[in-house]
Each structure stands twice: as C-alpha cells, then as structure tokens.
Image 1: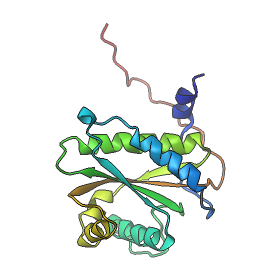
Image 2: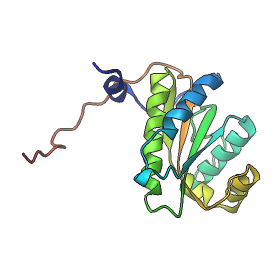
Image 3: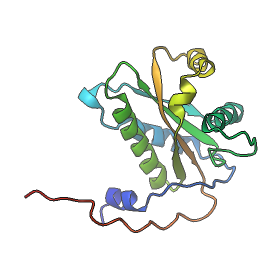
Length: 176
C-alpha cells in the first residue's frame, strides 16, 4: 500500500506521552510538513508557534484547562506531550480556519510517519483571544491579528498506537 495512504489509515490520536523530548530534527520535519499544507489562493497565511519550553508549555496547558472549565490543576489537556505546535490563522483571511485545519492534518500525519504520537487539542481560539496570549505573540515577534486554530501536541508515545475504530457505513454517496 502507498505509504501516505497507510499513514492516513494508521494515524490515531495519542493521549499518553512519555516525558522524553522528541529530536529537534523530527520537530523541524513535522513543522515543514505543516508549512506545505494547501492554502486558499496560495496565501500561506497560517503560522506555527513551536513551544518546547516547559514553562511556556505548562502556562499554555493551564490556560487551555481553564478555557475548558476545569479547575483541577493536576489535569493536563495536553496529556503530557512535551511539544505543542500552536497553529494560528490570519483573521483577515476568510478561509484561515480551513487553511489552519489542513496544516493541523499535515502536522499530525507527519508526526505519525516519524513514529511519534500526536493529538489535536482545541480551544486555541479562546486562548489567543485573551490579552495575555496576544501579548505573548507580540513578545515573540508575531504581528497582526491571529485566531488560534488548534494545538498539535506531540511527543513519544507511552504505549502502542491504538487500533482504529471500525468506519461507520453509509457515509459516501456516489453520483455517477
């Protein structure tokens, strides 16, 4: 079977990670795959903020947890993943959510292809609507108006890749 089609069928959301930091070369390859995602009219208006600093990662996790409405500080919505790739779309681009979703898909497939685990965690929009995180973007040199699309949390899997659930029937309609 074609390797890309195989990766699409085998990739699963991973929700348990070891504390081991993936190799920087692998993180860079994953990011590069994300940057090659299609974009409406070729605008390439999606950016990725690669967070490997544990203190920033933990602040981001805490903010995500609070957006989720969970006050239990022991809960980590990023499931212990040591790397968070935050995908942001330019608010002035009408298809930024779609473009950002394609970037997220590429990131997750590349993560799997490199033998790592990944999971898409939501609530990035709500986080990056907060003044603290808007300021964070300015502090790292990101200008403009950005919507959070998602967090691609990646790391070394703690356990095996889960088996896929059976595909639901009746989801394809042919018009020939």
